Image (cartoon, rainbow, N blue to C red; front, side):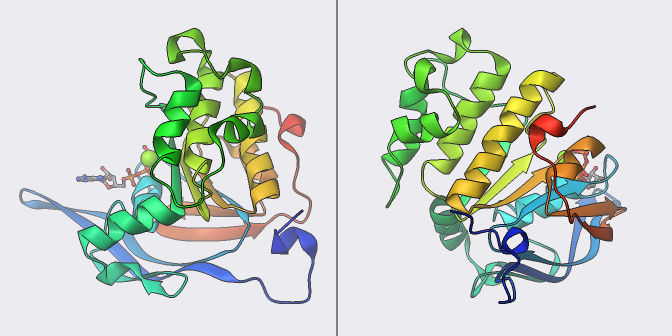
Length: 247
Ligand SMILES: Nc1ncnc2c1ncn2[C@@H]1O[C@H](COP(=O)(O)OP(=O)(O)OP(=O)(O)O)[C@@H](O)[C@H]1O
Ligand SMILES: [Mg+2]
């Protein structure tokens, strides 16, 4: 099963999942205004794998947090499907995040006193149509490690538990902020393989922020941010699989 429209080369135009129009984000720091986003227009398509690159401070995390409903823009609009996220109240944003979005961050934020399976089960217990925790862990190739505690797992394994936890509720969107930032190359590739597999098999629209230019080669599209704007978007006609990447 491949729900990825850019990879499938179907005639139908790809379906837009996210649309932002001229979003800005300004932080007021005492007397000083920090312009984190200066007018971002983007569309994200159903099932695509997007990599976001850009220097430190260019606005990547700010943009990802706005797409994920963790933060609101100062101006402009953000649509997810038919919903205008920019008009949502906190309670509705919480519901949106719970029902539709999976997050993966650089640090795994697992609960140390719970096993891998129990960490994933925390999420599946409050979701409407979850994967079974075992199934989610199997998808990231951790079936042998389900009863291990985080301290008994390597960094890459812990990150894969975090991915299993994020995808167990079957989110439509998976937003990842430097998911391999704390990992060495070999472990990073295993984690990227897990993300590629989830994208391929569940059709989850996936956005990965990274400083690592090599990772861009596995994306359908690459967004380059610079100074709070999207400087350019590149379409990869031949995307590489993670094990072909080197850095
Ligand atoms: N809560 C905040 N309060 C004030 N300024 C902020 C806040 N969050 C981000 N900023 C500023 O907004 C700009 C964009 O930050 P952002 O975290 O989005 O960058 P980034 O591209 O993710 O950088 P990095 O690669 O270092 O993670 C930076 O100048 C940052 O200092
Ligand atoms: Mg960041």
